[in-house]
Length: 383
Image (tube, rainbow, N blue to C red; front, side):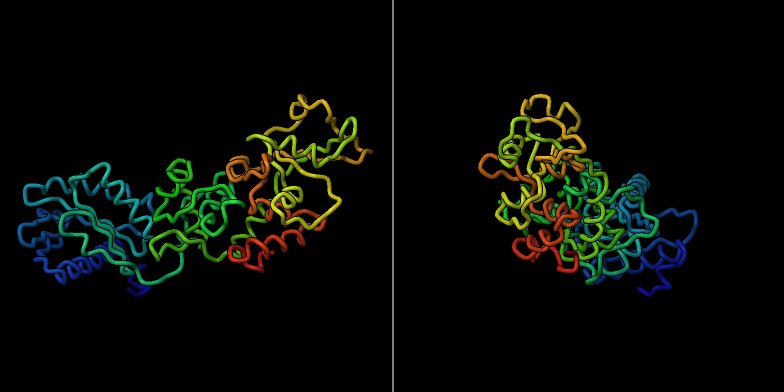
């Protein structure tokens, strides 16, 4: 469809969609009867039949292919379609100029859950067709190859790299990373709902995350599953976000001892883990020496060391033995961490992020991790 057609008025979009749907159905052997184009209709948009199958079709078109537009529109059309039920089985179809396959699946999942007896369809002007109902699945088709969708004015989260969003990014990347470096489920996801359920977050959080990636052009689902693209830009922004909201507390050992052994002792269990260069050493990818170990904890302050009799806060004039760092993204960090010899260790993505923004030879450490472990995950220009 031409650019001019995409920008046309609502009635013109509706007429174009109706013509496209008629052609698809006729090509598949359906007999199609269209309603007269008038404001006060006494018939459904289309009546179609093939053999014993007969549908009355209610068609609605949105200006944008966003889930928060299409799902309510499908609901409205469903209620309207029920008035034609005596003339055949209701079929409700919604469309837009351009729709992500994951969004189409979201609409069909909603329809299956709340109106299982109503046939459902989703179409756009670039070849995407998704249908559910007797005799309709054969109409399904993939859109032409295209980059990830970017919806102007889409309702998106304020922080694209929020705690849960960072965790979901790690889940999408997990199939490309050995499990010894990242604890996360490993599979491909057709839509936001599948991603959310597998990652252990709410469907609403998963949907907002995918919508944000689409708005920024960082996800492509033209192959039928969510795939991260434009990774140089994505990791560059993620790295910038990792430099925010970092708070460290320097501590020293009261009676001496090995700071690395003390850090490892703290990082046992699920409430703390090694970070930065100590974590890089733990996964056999260390490069920097002479920097005190960092340990991620959930809370800072004196309560963080209250039960550790050998730790005291370092004074300004004292060289710290180690640093306690409040996890800026605790869900992402503590869900993704791995275990080495009983010690909890930040995942390799987290180590790369933290090292990339550390002023003491951090970029060199990040470069080594990318070359040794993440070469196929992170493009070189992100270093």
